Every structure is written in C-alpha cells, then in structure tokens.
Amino acid sequence: MNKEDAWAKANNFHDRTGRCLVEFEVIEGPEKGKKVYKGKINLKIQVQVSTPAGPQIQVQERPFDFDFPEGKTFNYCRNHFDEEANSAVNEFKVAQKKAQEEARREAATKVVGPGFRGAVLGPDGRPVQLKG
Image (cartoon, rainbow, N blue to C red; front, top):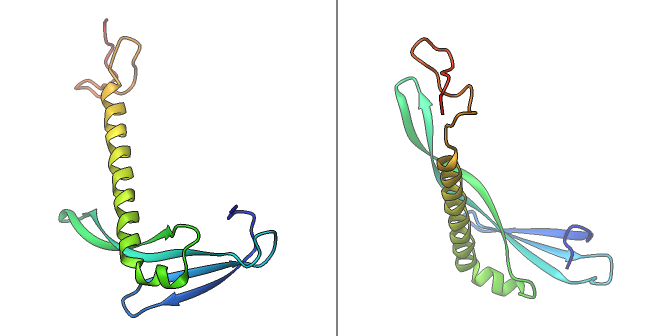
C-alpha cells in the first residue's frame, strides 16, 4: 500500500503504561477498508549535556514510532506490541551503530596532506603550511 497517497482515518488506542497503537483505515481508493497499524512508545535515551559543572549524562524521553507488518489485526498488534516494539528498537540501534561506525571510518580517512589548508593551526594561531 502506498501510505503517502492514501486518505485514511486514524484511531488512537492508549494503555496505562504509555503505549499507543494507531489504527489507520483507508477511506478512499482501491484499497478502501484496509487497516494499517503503527505503534508509538517513548524511548529513554542517555544524552550528554554541557553544564557549568562540566558534562553530565541525563536521561531523556524521546518519541519513537514503528510500523506493524501489513495484514495484521488489531488483536495481534495489541497482544504482540512489546515484541514488535523491541524488534523495531533493536533495528534502530543497529542502524545507529552502523552510521556511527561509518562516520568514524570516514573521519579516519581524511588525511592532512599537501593541499590541505585551514584546519592545522600553529602555536601562533595561524594556519601551518605543510610541505609534502
């Protein structure tokens, strides 16, 4: 289903623990009546914050949305909410670690060479002319 072009009606279902299940029902088009489900949770993330006393680690809550597989029913989504949420969070963590590793690898390949200007400063604060 093309979720970007579909007109849908959304119903939100919440429980006491803060989990939210959103049911989208397509109201126009060839797939009229089809239902798609999305889950919403709050992730607790450790963030390093600069304070006058120095850097500190704080725990913040951030919203996280995930999709249930197409063709599942409301009861399946309600009963398997935690398993689907955990698998979505694990996929997110793997993607984040991969992106961090790729950024580290890219930063390590940047070599200061003869044509490089502006980033290496000498003791007087002026750019150093590298000979190569």
